[in-house]
Length: 172
Image 1 (cartoon, rainbow, N blue to C red):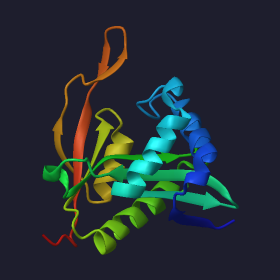
Image 2: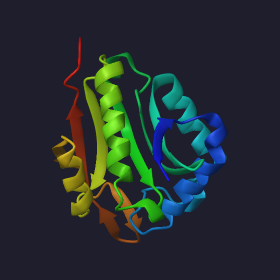
Image 3: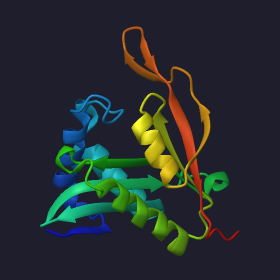
Image 4: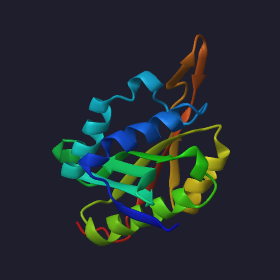
């Protein structure tokens, strides 16, 4: 089957929710808890990214196997960035290039069609070296660490790294 990278649509809500739940079930898969993956959460992502960002899905045989999104915060001073980038790949598709295809198309569209965007920002857990290296291979740079920002349970905290990609097609 051929994997297609296409814009997300509101009618994909149930598949997007199922995808997020599948990844949330993996320890360290997403910051959100399964109870936080609601219809309202998915609808909010789709609406926010449709109006002020970019959201793509990896689709195979009509099934959503991956998703990537980021949005511009609703402040004048942040109009030049896409923030809170999140990528979600179904466990059955992890390690098969789906994430790289999603990311490559996402960054390509930012460079080509969103020339007003200078920065694309994401967070990654510091100890997740595989993902840190993956993002670096795509051109992301580490800007800093947020010590103990993620609550992981009683007395347990994780440190995310702030990473950024600068759009070579940016036009002020």
